[in-house]
Structure formats: C-alpha cells, structure tokens
Image 1 (spheres, helix red, strand yellow):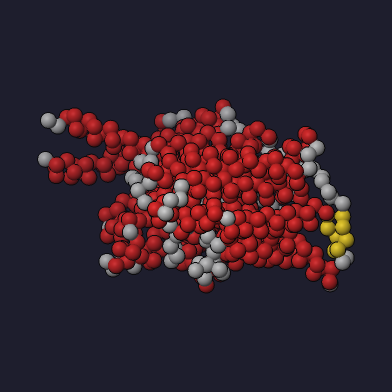
Image 2 (cartoon, chains in turn purple, green):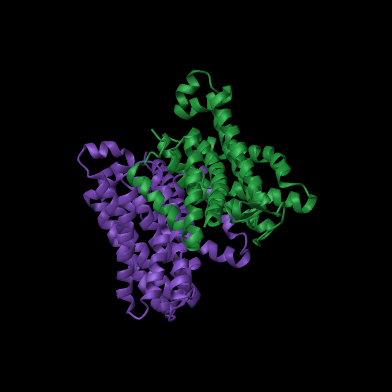
Length: 314
Length: 289
C-alpha cells in the first residue's frame, strides 16, 4: 500500500510541473501586463532560490554571494549588449561559473565558516572593484541598455527557469545528490566512503553560480540602466535566502518555488504601501521563520498532509 | 618623503586600532558563543549614533558618552543572546546546525537593525565636529580626535585582554570557549558566560562606533563595510585569539592605509587579497593553533 503511494507521488509531481509550465508559457496571451511583470520577479527569485538551495540547503555551506554572481551576469549583459541575448546569457553564466569555481577552490576545501565569510564580502568586493574600474578606466559610472519588451524578458526567464528545474530534477535522480546529502550530514564520513568531497562541492557550487549569472544577464535588459550599486545589491542575496527559508530549506525545488511566489507577491503589495518599512518587515519574517518555522511553509504543509493521512488510515 | 611615510603610518595605526577593537568584540562572540554575528556592524552604528545624539543634543563629549552608552549596549547584547541565540542553541540538533541557524538569524537581524535605524533617524550622513584642531606631528598633520581615539582604542583592547587573562570571570569565559559541556561540569554557569560574551562584543563594537563618529560621517548603513573587514581580521588573527585579532587589526589598518594612499578605490581589493592568501597558506590564522 505504502509502495504504491510513493510511486504514484513520484510520477504525479513532474507531470504537474509540466502542466504548470504549459500554463505559464501561454500566460502573457490571456493575463494583464502587471501580472506578467510580477511573474518576472517571481521567476528570477525561483531561479536564484533553487540554485542557492541546491548547494547550500544540502551541504550546509551557506553562501551569501548570490548578489555577486547575479551582478556578474548583470554587468556582462551591460558590457556585451551588442551581442544577441542568448549568447550573452551563456557568456554571463560561464563567467559566473568560472568565478564560482575559483571561490570554491579557495574556500570550500576548508571546513568551518570561512566559505560563508568569503562569500559575504564578495558582492561588496565586486561593487568596489567595478566602481573603481568605471571611475578610473572608463570614466563614467553606470550604463544604459536597450530596453526589451517585458514579454521577451518573461520568456527568456521562463526558459532559464525550465533549464534550472530540469537540472535540479536530474541532479536529484543522480548519485551526486546522495553525495551532496552525505556531505551535509557528515563530511568526514562522506569522504571515508569514497566521495571526492572537495570536487563534488566545488563543481556543484560553480554550476549553481551559472544559473545565477544567467538570470542576472536577462534581468539587466529589464532594468535598462545599471550601475555597480544596482548590480551588486546585497538585498538580492537577502531576498533569496529569506524566500528559500520561508518556503523550506529542506525541499530543494518546491520550497524556493513556494517561498518566491508568496513573498514576491507580498513584497509587491507591501513595497507599494510602505516602501521604507519593507526591508524591516522582511528581516522580521526571516527571524521569525528561523526561530519558529525551521522547516518553512513546506514543513507546515507536510505536517498538515501527515495529519490528514494519519486521520484517514484506520 | 618622511612626511608621507608618517601620514601612512599614523593613519594605519588609527584605523588599525579601530579594526582591532571591533574584531576583538567579534572574536568574543564568534569564538565563545559560536555565533558568527552578522549584525556586529549594527552595534558599531548604534554606538556611533549614541555618541552623535549625545553630542549634538546635549553637548556631551563622545569620550564621556562611551561610558554612558556602555551599559545600554551591553544589556542589548545580553538580551539579544538570551532572546534569539539561546533559544536556537537549546533547540539545535548539533553545534554545526546551531552555527548555521544563528548565522542566518544574525543576518536577518542585520537588515532589521539597519533599516530600523534608517526609518527612525533617516539615511542622511550625520557629521559633527569634536576636537578637530590639527596637530603637527613631525610634519604630518592630524586632527586631535584621531590621536585620542587611537589611544582610547588601544587602552580598551588592553583592558579586555587583562580581563580575559587575569580575572576569574575571564578564566570562566576561556573555559566556555574551549568546551561548553566540560565548562559546565566544573561549575561554570555557561549560559551566563555566553550572554556576557555576546554583550561584551556588542559593547566593544559600540565603543568603536563612538570613536569612529568623531572622524567619519554616521549613517544607518555604516556597519556593513566594517563588518567585512572585521571578519577578515578575525580570520587573519585566528579564531578565539584576542592577541591575534589585535595584530590582525593593525596589519589590515596598515595595508589599508598604504593602498588607499596610492589608489583610494582598491582598499577592499587589498583586504581580499590578504584574506585569500591566509586561507590558502594558513587557514587557522597567524596565531592560531
């Protein structure tokens, strides 16, 4: 009985996701522009959230550099704006990938909080360096980009989201998923059973950075004007982490999707009403979630399902 | 030439002493309570605003406001530890899990505190002038307040060191830092020590903020840039090593003042180069075990 339930669950959810993707792909045809624009931010944070959670949620190495890799994508897009967008997205992703590889090689071999500290300053470092470069080398701060229509941005982000989901899905079915999880539970034990822990950590981190950079490249065309302060905004890191934790760090894919959807919609309304208190409110949400809801909304939903299931069975 | 040299050395000493002060505070929090306190910079900001308001509203000297603000900062720190981190510590499955959840909570706290300050005091740059008369030291010209803050910072660092090395409570704190459960076995009130350490860390950051407010503009978001540097100082000096933090602070102060003298935009880059080098060569820090 139990076995049947598990298999049906396993096959049911991917189909549900496919249905959702078809619905989303046709959405600009029958909904109002502002909903499409809202979904652009939701997609952006789902991509960032799944990328963050795939590495940090499993291995327990906390990265605070989402904004840095996202910003690298944004700046690549601004500098290479003469090339066609798919090429730019690829280059931006690869650049973030290489940077992630570099950061990983330096800090992921060492245990402890060093990775966290190194990533924490990274977006500040990039912001300072870019500012110095713009002031001293190019002479002008800030760049303009040709504005793309919101539908184009929407479809590009949906495409990247689809690839991210696909990558996360296949990762979960591969043996690397077990390697990542055993690293998160006990790294020493993982090394003893023959997992090349450093290689797995570094490669996974770099791959998740690829998607962050790609998302940044698309978002740059949505903003049309960027400067170092906008591109390497620490709030992007904060929002990503808050959304993943609110959704549930334990569920790699559904947690970020749920968290990003709920909180982006919330931030849209709150930002319009109380622009100055938004960050304050979101900080409080993060603290409350960590203290009282360690498994996030998904944990709450799971507990609810378990309770219903327990009541249903005799 | 000699004047340039003096300029760089004295500027390095001053920023180094401030970095050391903040880093010793962070080291007490991180090394003893295991909370990587992302909101440490916000306590610098609170200290700076405290000194700024006491000076502009009541004309109280920032050096006296150090003493006035101290108990408040300490109590806020102890309360934060009791309300947030003690709760997490008791419910955490392991020390590693606690390190992650406390880090993320402190990260949230950082945004809450800085935005709370921006909301209540505005995000303009607040400047006041206190002891700003220039003094000529062998040809290099400095404001008196910079030299005063250097002296005060060094004295506070020494007091903290003596407190940890010579007093009974300092011994209890060191025992707690080494092993919480063993410290508990020999009769140390561990949770009290953890709270005191967190409060002391907040206090030292606030002191640094009050000293900084004499020299630099006070803003709600001033903490962030110091926080990154403080982390690097603590790693450089070795986690849990107070003398290491003192040396690390001066090293970063000197490097920063040399680099910013020649190329003002690249200070941050030079700190990161040091950070990466220390991680590659000696991740336990220059004085670490």
